[in-house]
Length: 261
Image: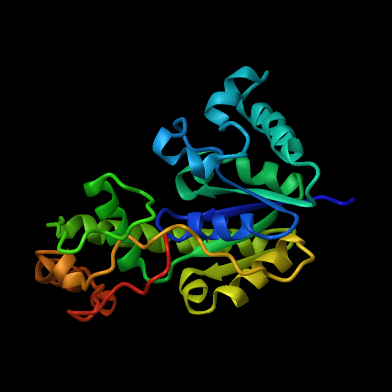
């Protein structure tokens, strides 16, 4: 049996945990969370890591050699963790990917297939991340409490939007040069047609079966109009316009696009 391995490259709050839960429900696929996250798994999120390998921060120091060699040996273990399944992979975010510049050449040398997950609505993903930090909840099976609202730093929103746009441009450039099968899946397409977006991912990573319907336990964290969630929405909108980002300002009263985190 030929085994295929994939890496999902993404930015925070782009729907990657949602996509991983969908991939886990597919026949012959093992999908793991962020194995290179720089901290151990928090007990409240242990269900996200259930059945997966130990994170590199735990296992890596036990392996011999400099970091590139430890990453290589760690991936040996990751790839054989579920050797009974034909497809396995994990997700890695922008900070982890570019914080260890040797990782991309190592993944390419090991013939990893590349899934690029982007959320084009960078305003929405930036606000989602800010709210996550304010309420200290990254993932949940419950939507944000009705009536919850936050004051945010307008310049922080602008800075996050700019960083996300740079990341999307960078990872798309990486994909253009990737020597093995790759696919870009947009969060917005996953929301609009989950089955079709999932099918494109399964085709890329070498999963033979058609997509199976899966109900993710995750709930979106923002389910209210932006001007209700953000108490100083007008200030944020003005800061964005001043920074040349006026086209990204949502209409007052509009909601998030939906989906999951």
